[in-house]
Length: 385
Ligand code: COS
Image 1 (cartoon, protein in one colour):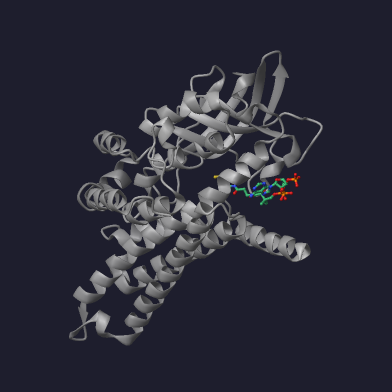
Image 2 (cartoon, rainbow, N blue to C red):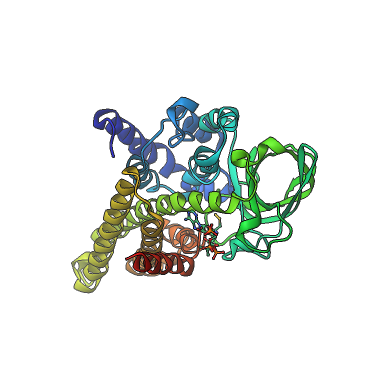
């Protein structure tokens, strides 16, 4: 749903120009330094990019899902790291509070997330609990009007920069599954909370991840999201439903950029007295990429519109995340192939994107987890008939 096409097109034009003129020229610097430059961060804050999805009453732009995915298509034509630094504020770092938080929690934290003053982060994964998220062992023990959190979280996006964490922890020690998990809002400077060294990753430099360690971290009881124990896993799953659709849009944006690079190279590079784009075997790679990109874009828009209409989209979001993340992997692979030896060289953007996009098939649920979510939902629907 596009609420006001005229103002939305202005926003989209602004993002497209920003990507072209300000972000793409800084990609090599981000890859080199593993950080987003401070002036770019400031500009992103001023443009409202940290608060795209946060409701207007809490200082954000309150984009609908369709608007959000369309902005992501444009934004993600630049290195994924530029979106990632604000991605948690617009997604997994704020959505738990937006969907299930109390009014007091929303008022306290959403305006600062929307402005980018605080970076939000989502702490679900642990050393021993990845795909089986419900088996997490980080504990939150009630002590008077506080909870005491102990445990460790792993590969937490934006942890080194975060001021605020949504932390899933077990409040009912008698359970070992999803039922005993609660979600907490934990501020970065709470005593006992430490962040590990940034992980050394295959790609996506500039989008940092790290361990987050909780050693007797005392959190006020009112920081449990929604004020009720035992709902944390469901909150996390609802957050991931939306996040998976967003990641599908990120993959579409990245694939469009990678394909632009491949197309330009195919038009310029000459072999056997012809531009290589004139050869049908190269054309097949371009055409297959364009076709799959169009399919991923169409399904992502369709699911986004369904979510805006209030329909459940757990299965559709998983379909989009599965298809789009696998699609961008194939597009990146073909783009390297079209570039030939040059595609293996760091001087060309496709080499970096090839490594960057590999993550999309892993995080926010692996492709295999998406398959499982899709099939489970199909069976659930079939049982209802
Ligand atoms: N929305 C709302 N509630 C949901 C839900 C969703 N999308 N998915 C599951 N739930 C609910 C279920 O209805 C169930 O509640 P009841 O017990 O009241 O029926 C509860 O949550 C547990 O669900 P389920 O039994 O399906 O949980 P499983 O332990 O089998 O795990 C998967 C389900 C595998 C889908 C989940 O663990 C998962 O998504 N894993 C991947 C985690 C991930 O993406 N990590 C990435 C890192 S975070 S960036």
